[in-house]
Amino acid sequence: MILVMGATGQVGSKIATQLLSEGHEVRCVARHFPNKGLFAGAELWQGDANEVSFLEDAMRGCSAVFVMIPPNISSPEIRYYYNKFGEVAAECIEEVGIKKVVNLSSVGADLESGTGPILGLHDQEARLNEITHADIVHLRPTSFMENLLSGIPAIIAMNRFFGTVPEDAPVDLVATKDIAARAAFLLANPHFKSHNVEYILGERTLTYREIIRVLGQTIGKPDLEYVEVPDQEMRNYYIGAGMSQSMADAMIEMSNAFGNGSIMSTTARDNTNTTSTSIEAFARTTFMDAYNKALSSDAARRSGPTSEARP
Image (cartoon, rainbow, N blue to C red):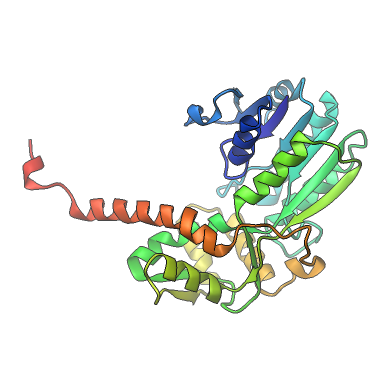
């Protein structure tokens, strides 16, 4: 039995469905399962993974586990949140005696300061490494390509994509399906020993100039513009969108660390950490699908009810 935490998330859902398609026994853990049909054949454990008793019970009988700390943008103290959640996962692995662990971490987790929310993953790697009986792989992916989807409303409304990273700064993005593919392989073939780190850096290094050009051409907006936003303006936007001040500050710090290259300064791209999904392929599939769906919803909202629809 393989346990997947965060089974309804961007990475966890893809890990679970891939393992199920390969015929593995899978136990999915999530707070809610809005689409249970996606996990046909799996054991669904619905509950709070931040509760020791629940997570210990879920881990019992599992040969390997995928662990991650789900984001919480409204937490009033983001590093405290990461540590409290991470402590529960580590305690359960220790108590149950799990032997094989795949941990979702991040690029920059080796750094001790200046990386915003990634500092919580730095703490979690150190915490898990104290479990001597477990063999662990810390996956350190770069930023998700799927994060680009958050820019779709502004693209539709203003033909602009807003960010804080300089337009020509080197950027590495990875599709979540490529992260999930590696995690699923490790969970299904847990031959790794000791404590290890693997980077996952996407198909190639880009810039936002190139990214926005590809997205614009794909959706029929060749004049799509990238707009670099001052930190304080973006912070205000984040807080207005529901982020806590702590999370907003952490996100700005992380963006700056990506923009100035400090996060990527301690790793280098090679054949082992380069994945297959290009920005062009992502734009044609995931981004285009999400854009068309948002465009349809926006058109429906603008049209409103017709006179014939009156009771």
